[in-house]
Image 1 (cartoon, helix red, strand yellow):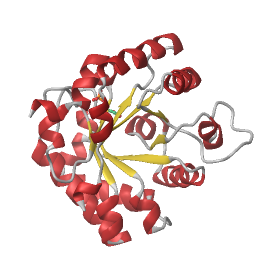
Image 2 (cartoon, protein in one colour; image 1 turned 60 degrees about the horizontal axis):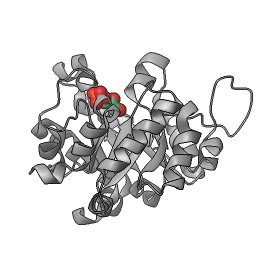
Image 3 (cartoon, helix red, strand yellow; image 1 turned 90 degrees about the vertical axis):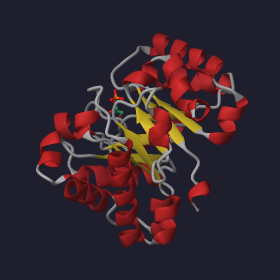
Image 4 (cartoon, protein in one colour; image 1 turned 90 degrees about the horizontal axis):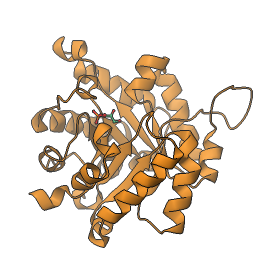
Length: 260
Ligand code: 13P
């Protein structure tokens, strides 16, 4: 079954690049990618909301094999939620993936597991794929609580979903201490937690869902460490922050297979 999981390499641009810079970055990236890449790996970019329309237009008009994704959304379809973006709006822009529950949303903007669960369901309702993030802080890891923290996030984030919905989604394990720090989890540590996440999914939703769900690792993924991380049996992709802002670096991560 493991072969059935096509790797997904996603670039989370966070709050970087206006729409002009976004167009340039997508065009530069398209020059770096080959048709073989398209066959063996899925690629997505997650620009800020204000760039989405421009990025979507370039990708569709130039037939660039990159999926358009968002970084967040609200769970309601419309209403008095000043400053929020509805999942239906993202679906209308042909967004295929939405990052949900990134640690920066949880830590800086107070998102709870219940919020994450509502968002996951809303994204699925609009036939997009959630990339649901989880991960522990350094204090939690040092206190021996990493596994419990991640287990709780997975169980609560996926509560109430059907097994076939879980099989189709993406979970990103991003240890918070590895994000933007240049410190990466060792491939063994990353594999251990991603393997654990698959076990949690298997216990709650069954073996088929666990075999199908794609699990990304995120946290200081660079061209140099991507091959070894991607070589782990339970790591099916990468959620890349800083290195996805550089077309050449992001392309080398996407082409990790050529480095091994
Ligand atoms: P960095 O790759 O910059 O560490 O960011 C990881 C991340 O948060 C991706 O969502």
